[in-house]
Length: 320
Ligand SMILES: NC(=O)c1ccc[n+]([C@@H]2O[C@H](COP(=O)([O-])OP(=O)(O)OC[C@H]3O[C@@H](n4cnc5c(N)ncnc54)[C@H](OP(=O)(O)O)[C@@H]3O)[C@@H](O)[C@H]2O)c1
Image (cartoon, rainbow, N blue to C red; front, top):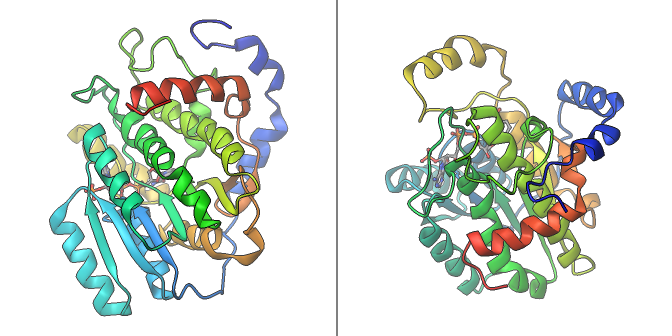
């Protein structure tokens, strides 16, 4: 296998125009609406203090589900708890964790592991978009850590517990942005120290990694009652990108945001994927909102999924 992970020829043959056309068509579709009730469900959501996570938290709570949110900001978490509990009469607890920290991520995962109550739905939503490369104190590129590795660590630590529950739906909030990593994972430069970093490229790589992890986790959970799927939540107006320069923020506010859809479509889709009865056994799939879609060829590369799994165990300080 090539050391870098570049498989230009392989992917070039696999790319098809119809796949891209399907994505364009799906981007204009509205999500399916799930009318089923969520009472008694425990829904764990990461990054519920803003944007898609916040809208999804409200949606699940409005249907009677109890929430456990994994957030980085205490004040916002308290506000969210107060708002949701007083408005909907469900519980909205939280665990504080900064997903750019390996230590925080491990701690949060172990808190979930020790919980007695089964997790019905686990939504990995927390994510960032950076225009400039940043690395964590552990030397991991930050977008890769927050958008991918933290969710890998949590899933890995919880996997036996979830399997023993015999039922859970894991949802990865991914992105059509995985298509920016058009030539696959660069295993020789996961921290972007050798190449010029670009926001879309870094973001694409992290979202691609998330989709590759789907392949391996689906294998692990197959037949257990636990499902794992990924979704693109639409191009929606949220607070994403606030860590970037004033120029980027002005571009986002004055141009980009005008083209984006309301975040309610993402919440509707997440509720559907988390609760809709007929999806109970569907696993290992990628949805554009609620429409089943084939991701780009590098996201279906089983060999790279295997390789990434091993790399992630090391980077995430997990036992093999
Ligand atoms: N918006 C879109 O059009 C779009 C499209 C495709 C995919 N997505 C994906 O959707 C997900 C949600 O993004 P969004 O658009 O809703 O953005 P957002 O409004 O910025 O919300 C991101 C959430 O993640 C949390 N978060 C960020 N960094 C964190 C960290 N280090 N540790 C813990 N939590 C952290 C944020 O917490 P704070 O409130 O403390 O900042 C916030 O709750 C992301 O995975 C994103 O890639 C979004």
